[in-house]
Amino acid sequence: MKYITEPKKEIPVRYEADVFVAGGSCTGVFAAVRAARLGMKVVLVERQNCLGGTATAALVNVWHSLKDTDYKEQIIGGLTREITDRLIASGCAIEQDDPSLAIQFNPNRLQHELDQLVLEHHITVLFHTLCVGAMAADGKINAAIIENKDGRSAISAKFYIDATGDGDLAQYLDLPVYRHPVVQPPTPCFFLQGSTDGLNIEKLISEHGHEVGLPDDFGWYGPVPGIPNIYLRADFHVLGEDCASAEGLTHIEMEGRRKAFALVDLIRKYSDREVSVAALSSMAGIRESRHFKTSYQANGEELLHGLRYDDAILNGTYRVDMHDLEGNVTFKYLNGYSIRMSGAERRSVEWNWREEEGLTGEAPKYYQLPFRVLVQEQFENFIAAGRMVNADEQAFGALRVMVNLNQLGEAAGVAAALSVKKGQPVYQLDGSEVRKTLNEGGSLL
Image 1 (cartoon, helix red, strand yellow):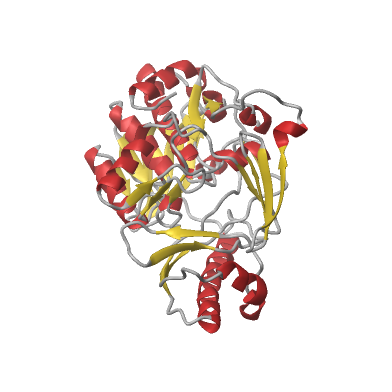
Image 2 (cartoon, rainbow, N blue to C red):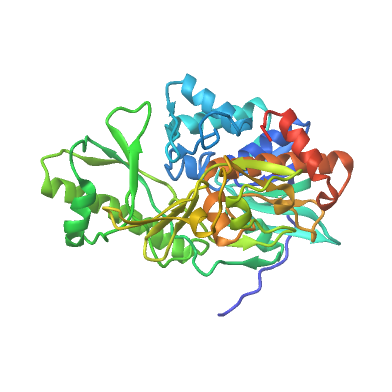
């Protein structure tokens, strides 16, 4: 690789804040709001033109259940509950007892609700803005470097939160990074206009998809509340690409759009349905890329066995959900039920992991995660929260979904505020105090 030398120049400090958040997914927004509610002045930057990340720009319009596995006790509250209630009140979400599609919502309305949420909390938001670097010395970050239409500038803050998903800010800080042997592939989504009721699209893909370059791949779909005759389609993975590289992302986005129109062509060819692509996502639904090491790595066995923690920052019921490099999917539930599915028609093999381990008695109704999963000890004023979470492959399969990452964001925001108020490095915080503060703000830990 050839190199050139960029001339040195002074970079203006455009904003000063208590807390800086890189990334405006719900993880980042909820971190920002939690910090703001604890008296922090917050600046948040987002590379897209909206907040919400996967839930909005990627069109993935489902959140998993906020109740335990019996659907009797609500175990998740906080900002996920608040935003869900706002969406339901607007007629743009439905909630039901379902392990996968418990909360279905209109991503466009969610964009609006998140806009209003940050405005209500006087958070400074910059769209079309990339965090492109960081300056640190003696174990403390002094500034984040950003670029947007105003050029290159710096943001000075007392605490920094990386909610970029890929851990971009963490990478600039040279924190220890790793990848799993199998990195779960992305699924680009789109909105389909027109009814497909009674049409077996899965069989159509399995038997005729090759005619338009579509693989026999696992997918899913659902309605979009508040928009009649529009359906979310998430039918295909894009395999073999690096979601944390520019070339990889470019191919993923182009291939996702190609497959959306190919599916429409296939439906038109083999049915009388008048369907069309109503909207394309502005980013693919990315499941995984990089991970960063922290004081604790989430463990799949501990999670499936429902271990409890004094410093818990997350409650969850979403199953272990692992997509492999061939597009097959494996689910493992807390009650022991397990299934591996292949292809559009979901050819399946079932077993019970609890029986295989000789476990008896009642299965846990939900799992938890301790605060120390967020804590690194290299920088006193930094946390990374999102799908870059430090977790083994099984644990990551359960933790990577949005309702769980929303909770990690809230915990990061609380930890940032406590660190600033106490003048204490994040790695010296008492995790039980973080948990207590989360509960005071509406969490159910």
